[in-house]
Image (cartoon, rainbow, N blue to C red):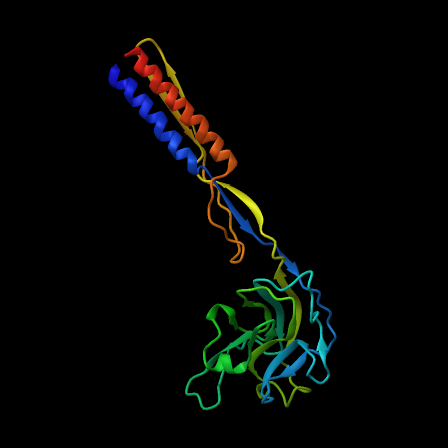
Amino acid sequence: MKMNKVLAAMAASVVAASALCAMSVTSFAVERDVNYTDSGNSAATSDDGKLLRANILNQWASPAVSDIPTEDTENPYTSYIKVTFEVSGIGSDSKVKAEGAETDKDLEAFLCGGVGPYSRHMGEYESNKIPSDEIVKITGDGEYTVEWKFDEPSSTAQILYVQTNIPLFEYGDGLENTSAKLTIKSVKTDDGVEAPSTTTEAAATTTTSSASTTASTSTTTSGTATTTASKKGEASAQTGDAGAAVAVAALGLAAATAFAVRKKD
């Protein structure tokens, strides 16, 4: 009987300790639309005139394109810019015969330009310096989304365009006559505001009862909930107020149980 009392006190202490990590808090930012206005002037080519491009912001183009703001101090570009666009006029094509290449190459698209301190152009793509998860495979006519990720936010953009390796000469003679088209559907970023979200991981409660000769312990544990956070909004797990309250109550209960056991002994 004495051993049962000791085990009951030990169980209460263990549950009290585990309650300290019962709650965790994560943070996440919310995706928002960048103010995009289609000027109808997005159709363009790479600098060598051979590959299809869609301008979103390019004041040096002819005609100039300013379909998103060049500066937005209230709603800056934070951890990424994400562009959804439509490809049409290439059918089910997913490969292209690159000049001088022995094998066909995947059709691909990616974002280029200058946003705050960040810049990249066709040269980064040709030298394989653009991360693979920021390049989208084109598998024919359809809608695609491509992303450019940043380490720091910026309130300014100088140039932004969707660049592809779709060759104009495969679908017509020059930009005016090609059937291949890129149509911008939306431009998004996150709002930069990290909103807290609470996740229950292993919240535990303990009830202990004692009779004149026996002590019994019952433990109830909740299920596990999962919260998904974006790259920029992820935060370290911390002990929440609810978890701390459960822990304090459990610790007090453990101490009382141990005292009662000693007294009866």
